[in-house]
Length: 282
Image 1 (spheres, rainbow, N blue to C red):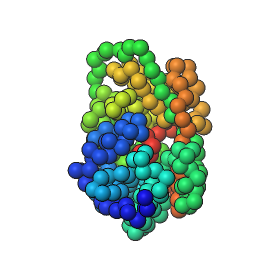
Image 2 (image 1 turned 180 degrees about the horizontal axis):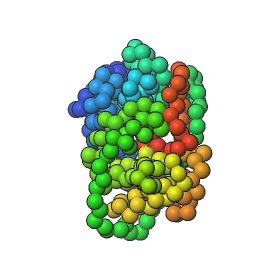
Image 3 (image 1 turned 90 degrees about the horizontal axis):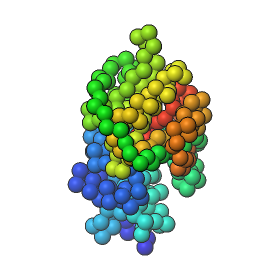
Image 4 (image 1 turned 90 degrees about the vertical axis):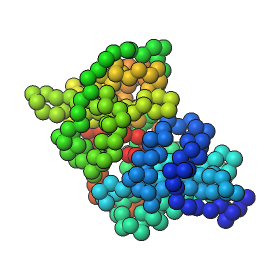
């Protein structure tokens, strides 16, 4: 097979089923709603690779306030790997983002993908670790959903490095029980959100300005989740995240490297993040 036999085109809502097929083959946790979030946010920046009328690869982008953009959902049919399709999709995403004048492009790379991204001009920023919990039973408890406050969104803009309130509002609307806030004397000292993925509940972002907020948010998430499997993409250099996950019987799954291409003028406050939203969104 030659890569020239592969046609790249815009992704449409009709392609979500194909995207779901590819992500199921890869064992990923995303849902149809996650694909739709990309298409809603960036309808001109999501692409598929097509061969003989069949979608064999995907890539999605999302721009945050024009400060930087994200590349995610890089998937290639296992039967078509090794022929440069993934690289072509990433190059297409970069071309689109460069054309829009986005000064920085970010992504979270697996160890296998990291050398490919380095060749495309990406540099490493910091390390992330995925941890999972498999429990025999889950609690059943009624909870009162908290509102996603403007104070939380303002803090997230500072900590993430750009405004992603639209994305967070979408997630909070779908999973209101996972909107958590930690306060001390009325001051917001931490917050977290979560999602019900295809196979596991996913905590993130998980942010703590004070040490006491980190376990409070994690333990409340564990009580509110009704799934037996849970995922957290923890910051390796967090003073609290990995220690807390180990103490609560989470197991290490894999490493990821946060990478960027271009400038990095808006790095946010990674030292306050215990876990990211997820490698697809940042």
